[in-house]
Every structure is written in structure tokens, then in C-alpha cells.
Amino acid sequence: MNDFLTMAMPKGRIFEEALELLRMAGYSLPSEFEESRKLIIDLEEEKLRFILAKPMDVAVYVEQGVADIGIAGKDVLLEEEPDVYELLDLRISRCHLAVAGLPNTSVNEAAPKIASKYPTVASHYFREQGEQVEIIKLNGSIELAPLIGLAERIVDIVSTGQTLHENGLVEYERISEITSRLIANRASYRLKEGRITEMVRRLASVIPAQA
Ligand code: PRP
Image (cartoon, rainbow, N blue to C red; front, side, top):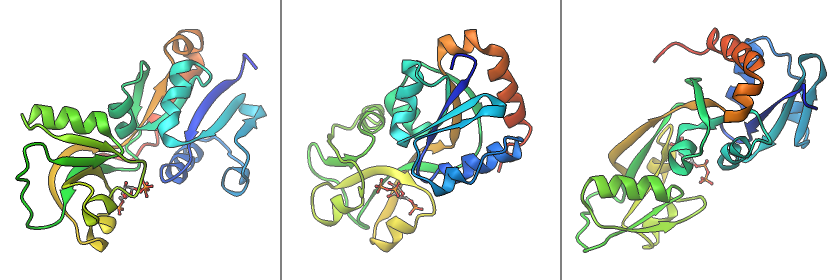
């Protein structure tokens, strides 16, 4: 396996755009990627092995070195601060991190509750604002929290804005722009620099222009 390059791919909303980008870069990925439930897929001719992981786990596989490279959202990198190289902004899966809540509500409490899948990002943000808050970590459907009185505000990803809109929530502050990044394990980058640089070159030639 050592001559293989192992790439961790995030299943979920980034997945399709990442596959499209790789195909545009000339990697002929079989339809198995979309159609099967396999978690490891090899491309023998390219000497590439793909592992299909949860988006939040991609950086873990890469940091630990079981994957040489990976595609991770900047949101995950900001939250987990993994010790990896960030090689390329792929400019796909564009969205942003924001503070949101019910409209026309002010936060009066001494330490308002903030629900988020991104507790590190949220606590950094509010510390920078000089605001003391209590962070409540949730794993998904964050928009529920203000609706049922668990939290005054949420910190979450906003993409189309549809989830906020359909749940009667509004955005209060924009924290950070998010796109997907190509990341690499530090040791792999030294050992397999030629192959990784080749992938960076191929991907860089097809990434979408700056919006
Ligand atoms: C994300 C995010 C928002 C939603 C935003 O959730 O947490 O809930 O997408 O997208 P929109 O602005 O286009 O509506 P995801 O679908 O990944 O699932 P989750 O709620 O389980 O985190």
C-alpha cells in the first residue's frame, strides 16, 4: 500500500462537489463513489486510495497519518485546529459561519446560552467580542435550540439560508467565510511530495474562479 496515496473524502454536502472537482482534474472516479456504501475505494491505475469519512473526521485521519491528504471544510479546520498542512483553497462548498437567533430578540442575560456544533469557534468569537457566554455543544439540527428555548443564539453554518428562513430565524453576525481545503499530513507531505504536488497542480488548474 505504501506506493498508494490515501485521500480522506468527506461524505455529505461537500462530497459531490469534491468528486466533480477531482473528475475535472482528470481522475476517473467510478460511479461506485455515489452508488455504493463502500468506505474504501481504490483507483488502481492512479495508485489512489479513497477513504470516505464523516466531514468532522477527515482532519483526524489526516493528522493521524492514516490518510496522506484529505478534503476538509474550513469550518472543521477552525474548530479542530489539526496539525496538518493546508495546501489549497478548493473554493467549493462555499458558505459562512454566523451567529443567528429569533428575530427582534436581544440578549440580556449575563451569560447567554449559545448552541453550536462548533464550540471552539463560538467561544473564540465571543471572547474576541468581550462577551461572556455559555456554550452548549450540539451535534446537528442546531436551529432547534432557540426555537425550544435551549439557547438564545446559535453559531452555525449558513449556506443558502433556507434552514434559518424556514425556521423563522435571522442572522445577527457573520463570523467567517468557509470553503473546502486540500489538507496533508505533515510527514506524508515530505515522503510523498511529488505525488501530492502533482495532485495540487491538477486540482489548482480546475478550481472555480474567485466569486
Ligand atoms: C447545515 C447547517 C445548517 C444548514 C445550513 O446542517 O448546520 O443547519 O446546513 O444550510 P442552508 O443555509 O443551505 O439551509 P446540515 O444539513 O449539514 O445538517 P446538521 O443539521 O445535521 O448539522
